[in-house]
Length: 338
Ligand code: MG
Image (cartoon, rainbow, N blue to C red; front, side, top):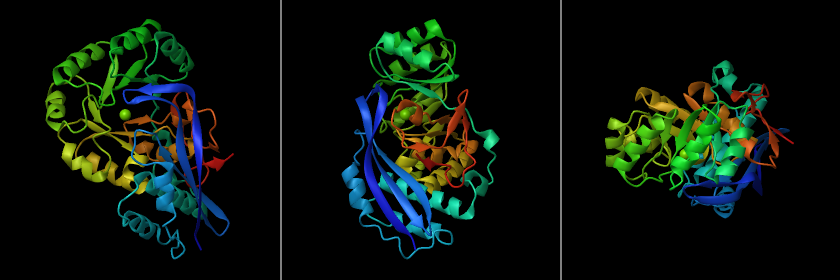
């Protein structure tokens, strides 16, 4: 018989972290544990404070969940259908339960998820390493901390954009991915900036304009010399249809879409539409990030450096070799509670 436990926790950043939406020193999360016959599956709901969901709304959702009638191996789809039948939906809570159910199923079957899904772990991409918005000195310090990573993700969308990129370019010619977090307001300005970034070794641009501005996104996509990836504009599977012609690719995160099953559906639909695929994370520990990493053999890019940015990770799982994602050979999502 399945049983469920959950508890709140606060992840602490190694450095305060700034993006166009504000500055934070940590992230509140809720961990879930789904147990059956001595096996435990682990999941995580990460709740950065710019999202509507909180530890309270997640736990209010979890308290309503009744798992005891399900068999996790025979009926994991039935469990997920049940979780998605709640209204309103709480995507981080559903994501936490989805990853715990997948983890538990893998553990009972003694196989890692990527093996159950016939994916080749050698095809995992490199992850980006995130450099938040900061003063010149801190930016340079973070670039030196990222020495093992060949792909930097730079957070822009403030008046300091050119200063930040020029500071990075003084010390490294590594490729950079750029995430604006909706921070540019004007399409002509955005296009000028994208040309400027393209000349400075940027690989792609993530969410340059506000998410609801689909006409301007379409205009920008047609003129941009670099691929443009939707993040805030694509939360769930249904959002793909709304933006499919306005971006070159999508950033899929378990917290946004409600877990691994939905993320897999999004990957398959994005491939049909010829969209590029990035697998990303919120600020999450190894628990959530190791689950998302199981999908990365299917992705063009991964932005899964969450565990590297926090100082109190309660889990082990994903590791990195010169930035390349290494999936653990443990069953399920590959995580172990420390
Ligand atoms: Mg983003």
